[in-house]
Amino acid sequence: QVQVVESGGGLVQTGGSLRLSCVASGSIYNVRTMGWYRQAPGKQRELVATITAGGKTNYAESVKDRFSITRNNARNTVYLQMDNLKPEDTAVYYCNANVYTSMWEGDAYWGQGTQVTVSS
Image (cartoon, rainbow, N blue to C red):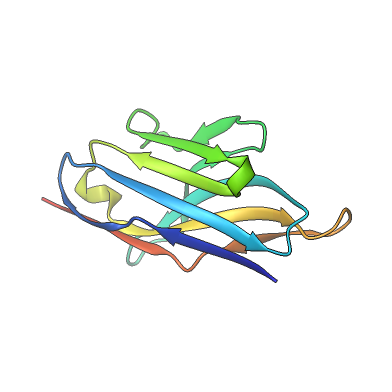
């Protein structure tokens, strides 16, 4: 079994910062790309940022100058540093981890989500 668990969400004022963490654990052979997605009420889930096992990053245009994604491969952990938060960043943030449980089998696993609320 593979578990993906996020933490670090909370309530902040506009302009504040939060750091989200996500840990993948369980029967893991390899963890490839990891990323953060978010879903606001009434909206579809959208990509926030991804990072490959080699450290190549990709950001949504709306966050690229404010957020930073990093990872610790030894800990199967990915982080999202969010600075200069805006009310439009309010959403449930979900961690995604592309995990291989054997040399042959891989799948995408999702965390339970962590709420980020930015007050105006």
